[in-house]
Length: 201
Image: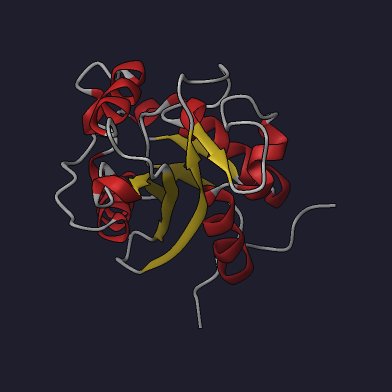
């Protein structure tokens, strides 16, 4: 049986402002006070895992150095025609400046000559406690890539990802609409059911 988090304060183990807002929004109904790892001066650990789950757990465990439970996300874009790349290296494709316009252009460049535009976003969420206990959950959303990028909402690769059955990219969608169907939302729904208190009314 999964361990439950009984309210209180939670560290979001990310220095990515977009992820911090998105995860914070998901946690709002549960009455949990969140703080970003950056605000606590916690360093970003090297992501040496070979899966989304391994990297999420690594980041969550590192952030418990604060003495608080920590929630970490590792997520990325897997492109079928590129053998699943960029995958766990999605952020690295954006370079040290986190230039996702460059990363999206790189995906388009490498897809030249490929008719297959299938892709999926994957997210792993890990909730870790200072005593070393960790719970990890995975979510996915399938779709296809579109070029040129569309929309200025969201972050990362959102402007080139069109979810299956949709007409708007993640970069064009209202944040609430994205939250309902995203890979992160799917992983979060599993985490919430297993580990979080009943949402505040």
